[in-house]
Image (cartoon, rainbow, N blue to C red; front, side, top):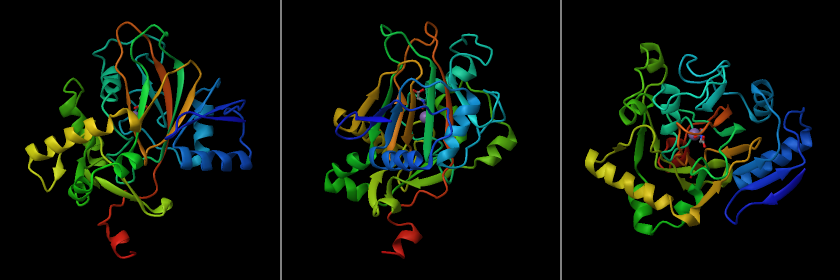
Length: 300
Ligand code: OGA
Ligand code: MN
């Protein structure tokens, strides 16, 4: 395995490593250390399908299942992040499967609508855009650094706040999506997460934690105040000094840490270009703890 650092802030590229094989224990340890310290890994020139992606993902924990009853893929643990159907047809931009991709262009961290949000996501590019096409990159923003750089008064303002995260609220942002069934809604009741989270596995360091792709409400603030703060956060974390953009090449496999990074796809011409990716997701095992969570208050 050959490792190259991608930017000062975060990210490494790995070549000469085959993710479709059984991975040796010492390599798993290296990859776990890298994702912990660098938050983003791009493995070049991979050759994967749903099964081998699922097997690779399992090296890092249990697989998360898709929240809707099998609407977009064959295998419930492998998400189709794609404007191409299972059968290979280029889908219309108003197809619900494509609308879900459009929602990915809002800054977010995966499955924040769960009480235990995903820890890692692992995305494989089967079909990527030609070089001349605009958009289609995946952009990341580092919430540890963004938090550190906040002015003190903003840190104080944000510290006690929680955001509402509701899977059903994607429908408010994308009214073209069909209603969830009663069962799907009941499986994912709204949750709240602290806007400033702590990382027990990083010596209780703090970072920002929020999303733009489900609910936008901030608890303890009026709707209007909350929205204003939320748009301030979005423009703040979009600044270049916190961000890294991944320019896709076919057969890239990228992995990121959802506890540290926000991400979004840069919109592209969905009708003109095909973009087909599959994703394995590592289920979270702990809630998002904030400075005022009982576990943290009682420990410190
Ligand atoms: C995702 C996601 C971004 C992209 O798969 O979770 O947000 O670039 N994807 O497709
Ligand atoms: Mn995502």
